[in-house]
Image (tube, rainbow, N blue to C red; front, side):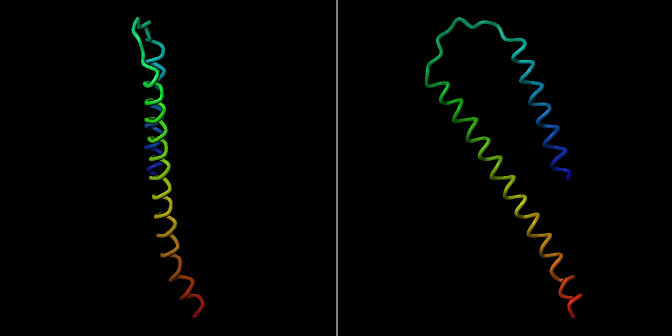
Length: 79
């Protein structure tokens, strides 16, 4: 549960920073290479995929620990 609070706190902070950066944006008179957008998309997609992988790994570990702790109780009840 502690991880969910930390994740929501981080998400709120990241969103606030993003909103401030968008609000304070000034026009940039420069050339942006078309490949830069693809690189940004790749960076965001790999970050999201990594977050999903880590969340899945932690959930799997949590459920595995819960089933390991609950198995001896059910075996004791069966005897």
